[in-house]
Image (cartoon, rainbow, N blue to C red; front, side, top):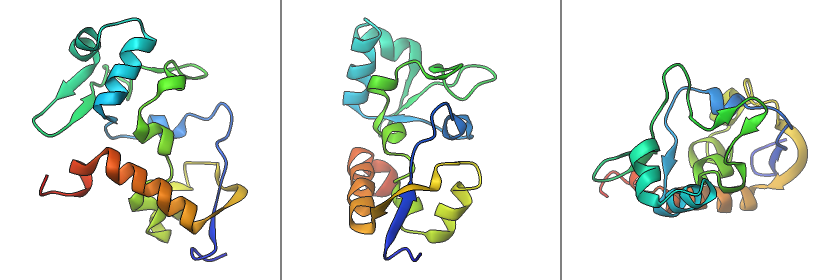
Length: 142
């Protein structure tokens, strides 16, 4: 199959490999509000406890010895309101637009190459959501 046809992906129940990769989980302002409400916290209390804010971005703080405060045995403690970055994985621009990166990600993500064929146009639309949600990550001028 070529990239022009589409990509196969299905999330594998119980897998948390994507959550265990080194890196940061970025948040939108809406992600912050949603997670706070889900945990019955004010956005300010959630931010103080879990968020690192810079002038351009928000990201989750990392707990010692782990990648995410919300990664618990069996999955994500805030799954219904998980950040856009997590929800959109693996349909990130850098993966969808580069077949080699998609294949490298498939080495740790057992859902890549499985499941239904996702038309490339749909995959690119989803990747665009990532670009929009995290514009400052994709446009250095912001």
